[in-house]
Image (cartoon, rainbow, N blue to C red):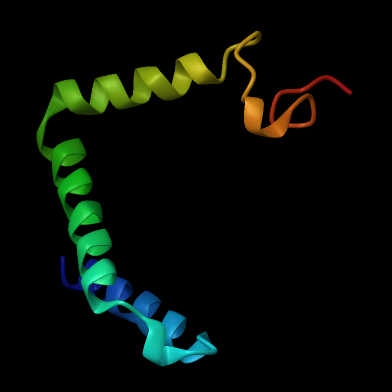
Length: 80
């Protein structure tokens, strides 16, 4: 738990250090995003049905014929 928290803080620190305009960083947005990450992680870890549904959705999207429209014919799983 502590290692994960440290990783999250380190990731945010690197983002702040590399930012060109630190004054425009929205603490509210960053906090909301990290909270959402925490909730999603807890849901996936604690509830088997959520985990199965999430994994099923990933597997279905990787099947031939299910193309990701964002990549056109050049995305993952495209022939050639």
